[in-house]
Image 1 (cartoon, rainbow, N blue to C red):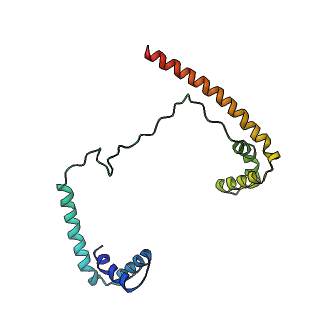
Image 2: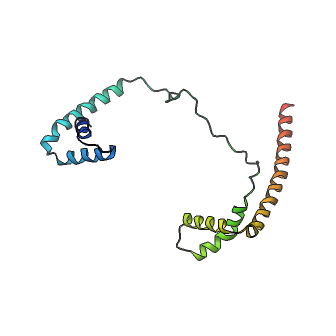
Image 3: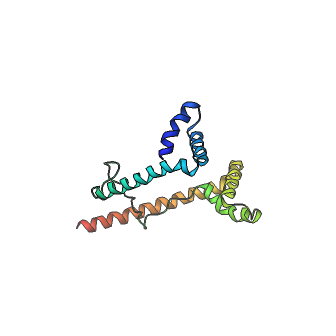
Amino acid sequence: MFFSKEVRPKIASESKLSFAEIAREVSRRWSELSPEEKQPYNELNEKDKIRYKEELANAPPQQESDSDSDEPKKKKKKRDPLLPKRPKTGFFFYLDETRNSIAEEFPDMKMSERSKLMGQRWSQLSNEEKKPFIEKNIIAKEEYKVAMEKYNQNKAKQAQQEGD
């Protein structure tokens, strides 16, 4: 660290290197130093470690709520297990139907690559070929609406019973 602080400005002023290139040059120069040349920097490093440990020991204890920002952390809202799942899209119905055949056709292909392939094939389908999957989506949407109405009615009943 001390070597870098000393050498970095010199390297930066000598040439128009990027940050990463400067770091590589500092590293290269450090590795070329003999152990005797590295000794003063190692001693400074040891002294700094002692200073840091002392500061850490004398520091006031950190509070749990102490954070970088004053905003409270948002807790993830727990999902109601009774809440109906959203309906699948036509694309996901297509995936369900083609996933096994793609796996058989390309057994050595990674799952991510298979997913890309299925996405490409979906985009190449005509509207007529997509129609059965889109119809399944429409049916799933209707079922979802019914399930949500039922869920909301049950939730309202529960809220009313808790209020009584």
